[in-house]
Image (cartoon, rainbow, N blue to C red):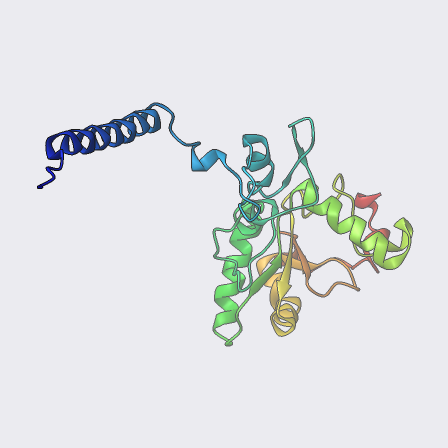
Length: 229
């Protein structure tokens, strides 16, 4: 006797099972599209860098030289001074356009340049170690002198106040190197340029009458100068 296998019934069941599997896969894909995974930028793993807020970024930004940013957001002057205050770059000459030279009194600057031309014939080159200074720069130098010498009285032998300093008014210049200052000390009267203090062989001011009468007597140090009292 021959047994017949119900092939058509088995084939239908297999087809139905395959369709159910495909339907389940399709439903899963639709759910994934509707529910995306969290954005990586908002997910912090243990080794991820922390997100920086705008406030933190602002506080870490470089600050402008000469200002100090306080908690109230206001810019306040601090002890930082630069070329605009009269700080002199290395190698600055009397012909420079740096503020320390450009803001000297025009008559003083002109006399210095004439003297520099004369000195160059002897192979001497003038450099400006200090010229015009802002009040802030002068105040800083005075504080440093007080710290170095131990008192306001001792510091006054070297550094004047911002209110009295001829550097702040643009009426004084410190010349270097030492052999250039020595040359100017010897020949400066012919250009109306004179040393003013015994203890500062580099410090010169304009004395127009010196061309005719020679330089006047010097003070022992700035603390003896009545102009600075």
